[in-house]
Image (tube, rainbow, N blue to C red):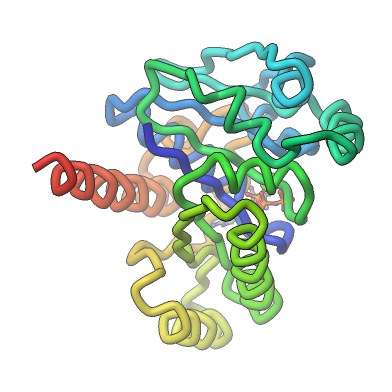
Length: 254
Ligand SMILES: Nc1ncnc2c1ncn2[C@@H]1O[C@H](COP(=O)(O)OP(=O)(O)OP(=O)(O)O)[C@@H](O)[C@H]1O
Ligand SMILES: [Mg+2]
């Protein structure tokens, strides 16, 4: 089971869109996927038109959880919305508070990939996600402030390594909202490619209106506009992720 977080400190950089599109892309390729909405905004759950009060909130507090099947091969855990905020506050006084998610999901079976859609902040929820996941996808939209958000996220990941000691988390930058008509897009892309050499996905996600529309009809991009640039870019990213994970597994076992 491979566990990915989609995380950055900056809001609105395409975290939810990436989590939903990669999760559904993997499931369309026959992989069994669990998408965990870790954001009280519950945007991933809303994108599939589902909601549950027994989501990440109860998973972190009592270990109980409702896992909802949203598509073939694709299940989802809702965040629990506002209730997750209350749980996070209560958690801050408790023992082992960064490892709740890891402990609660350690017996999870029948799943090839877990994808966590994270809130744009550093809190105990994201600390739990970081201690649970193997890899972080850091979406950076093509503007200066988002680049700064990526830098802050790296610092947080490094802080977490110090906190929990056993974290061996890897991260990779994903360029999002690329707009070939603007100079700033090309400039930021060039800079982050230099800055994060070897730690950036080859796939670049371009600006695409269909991606913005899809959640409104409770469809993923592959259902809403399968021939769009958004569907093309996210399917390419899905394949890039699958081939790097599955190649590493083959090398490991062979
Ligand atoms: N490549 C894209 N082109 C056009 N619109 C996009 C693209 N990616 C995402 N969007 C839209 O931009 C908005 C923000 O995207 P999204 O919700 O995925 O960001 P986020 O990082 O999850 O935000 P938050 O920090 O609030 O959780 C949404 O309306 C989404 O539909
Ligand atoms: Mg989001």
